Amino acid sequence: MNDKYVASRTDVPLRGPAVRRGASVGANAAVLASVEVGEGEVVGAGAVVTRDVPSGITAVGNPARPPVRERRVPSTGGAG
Image 1 (cartoon, rainbow, N blue to C red):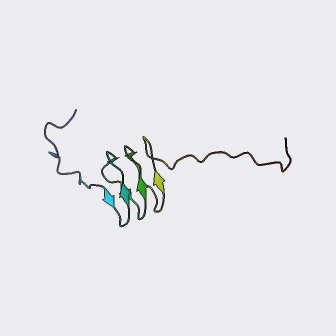
Image 2: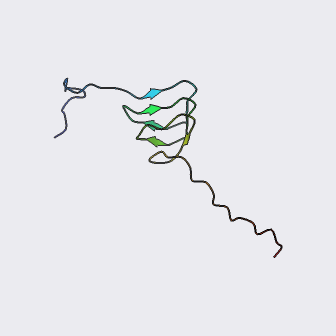
Image 3: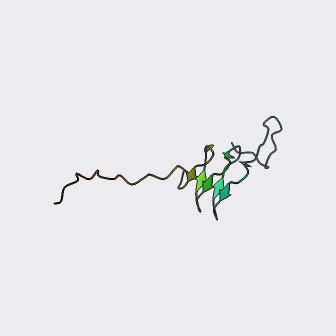
C-alpha cells in the first residue's frame, strides 16, 4: 500500500542525489534519489539515471548507461 502523505515514514532516512564537482546533467534528465553522479561525468539529455555511474563517463538513455561504441571491421590492407 502506498503512503497517504509524502515522507510520512520517519524510520526510513531520505537522501537525494549527489552531483559531484565538474559533472554535467543534460536537460530533462532524471536522477533518482540516492544516486551519485561522479566527478566529471556527463549525463545526456532525457537520460534516467537509476544507479551510480563512475567518474569521467558519459551516460545516456533509459536506464542511463555508457553509449555503445561502433564496431569497426579491421581492414585487411588490400584493395577490393
